[in-house]
Image (cartoon, rainbow, N blue to C red; front, side):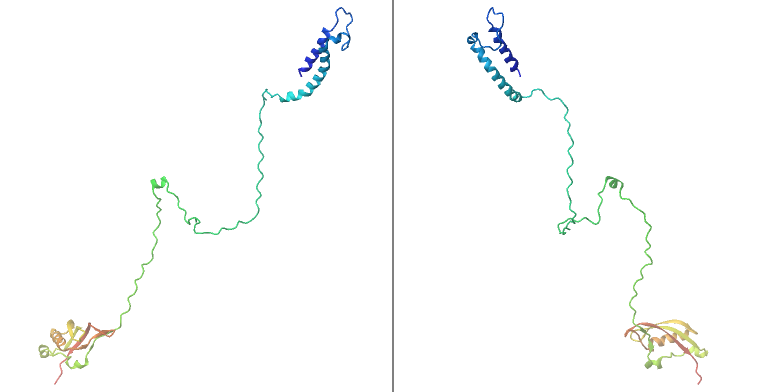
Amino acid sequence: MTLIPLISAIMAAPEATTAPAGASVPLPRNSYGTGNRHRPVAALLAVGLPVALVVAVALSPMVMESKPRTTPLIGTIIELPKPPPPPDVVEDAKPTPKASSATDSVDPLVKTTPLTNDFVEKGPVIIDLPPIDPGPPARPADPPPLPKLVFAELDPRFAGAFQPDYPASEQRREVEGVAKVRVLIGTDGRVKAVELVSTDSPGFFEETKRRALAKWRFKPATRGGVAEESWKVMTVRFEIKNA
């Protein structure tokens, strides 16, 4: 843009210098008279200036665009929010169940709670519950029943030796009576002990005891076919017989 005033000033300069001395009427602009032959520079300028002007005008946008912009831009930069990304399209499909393996971790049935400081300091909470009634004690099992006991009996082979002798003192006084004794019978059928149950006279008990230990024989008691000791009560009568 600065070439236009410069070219105008150059074109005006020959007009001022080429005017002849003493002329009252100025020569017309751009006329070629006899004096113009002595000014080849002015003629060159007259022809070259329009060409230079056209070239300058044509080149001026290129020169202007090639210059870098030195003036900084002043303003506020506003960042617009980015639009949200479009949602992913999820197909409605049921997931394929994964087959469990031995290496897969399994959640425990009972989840434990880690101990805290309060639990360690205060200790566990103890809840008093009423005692549970255990009910009646279990009845012990009954022992197996024992075989049936077969009581001892007087051996009929020794029946004639059963009656003891009549005491002489009771016979003289004609005293009659009964002696009841309890005898222990061994496994061999013999009497091992005699105990008094009742008697009408001490002489009756003494004679009965003596006869039982010496002469009485029994079939011993048995349990399941096995002989065992047993007690038996015997009654002996003392009577005076007339001749």
